[in-house]
Amino acid sequence: MKQYLVIGRTGAGKSSLINHVIGQKVTETSEYVACTRFVSHYILNTPEKNICLIDTPGLCDEIDESYDIAYLNQIISKVNLNHLYGTLYVTPLNDYFRSDDMRAFRLLDSELGSHIWANCKIVFTFSMSVPREEQINQADRRIKQIENYFSDEIKKSCFLGFSNYFLIDCVKEPSNNTLLTALLNDASDKIDDKYLAEIHGTASYFYKMSAKIKLYHSDHGATLVDASILESNYINTISSIKSVQSSSDLTNLIKQLEALKIKVSRFNHRKEKYRWSNSLENEVISKLKNIARSINEKTKI
Ligand SMILES: Nc1nc2c(ncn2[C@@H]2O[C@H](COP(=O)(O)OP(=O)(O)O)[C@@H](O)[C@H]2O)c(=O)[nH]1
Ligand SMILES: [Mg+2]
Image (cartoon, helix red, strand yellow):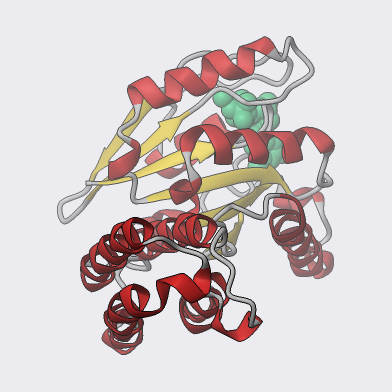
């Protein structure tokens, strides 16, 4: 079953959205108070497919900040994060990108792990509160702000953009079922064979380098012991690359390679072009990030 984690500020319309997608009132909503205090799973069964939407309490609201860690721990203990199919980030279209949203992104990224962004859709609620002709521009503007925020401020994150966006109004346009249809047919997580071949092809770099490390380690300031540890790290990477099948695998791989880059960056060849961290970045990481971006672009509606 495809499981989606539904996140966003209190009052963004997360619980309303879940009721809207499920087609009946399964979870409480409130105009005035943060009424969702617990993480809850809601399942929709259709004859062909099932989906599960996971409602969460809003992070970084005006109430006591100490709640955030308790809420995050609740998510960690109640949700099998490795089995998430995607994330729905819910935000009102008639709002702006606030500092508490930024803090929520930082906390989610550091506490739940970057892989929650692997197939992340942004759902703009309250869409009918914005004139129709301005809706798309407003949505595009906010998506840009969030994407820039990640690239400028949460540099270590594996967030590579939203895979889809939706304009919904749970109150004024309750019969719109575009989101439900998209969730039932969501296959954006499986990578096309064309991209898979490019991703798997990057393994050749690690075959080549695992042989070179032991030959040239002293030019890089690495001992023979360092070199054998790195050699096995590089060889292990080959199997991680070969097993990539989905967008979330790709996100995890990029994360693993970023960690490897940090590890090898303490070895410094005097010529910049030979530095292991530079070649890893230029020959592999940036290529994989571009592939991930193209995959995201392609699945946008
Ligand atoms: N007009 C309008 N009101 C909405 C929409 N989504 C939620 N609301 C209202 O906003 C309030 C907060 O919604 P709720 O689902 O409890 O937000 P949550 O805290 O994110 O779960 C409720 O009064 C909802 O009726 C929407 O798309 N349009
Ligand atoms: Mg709620």
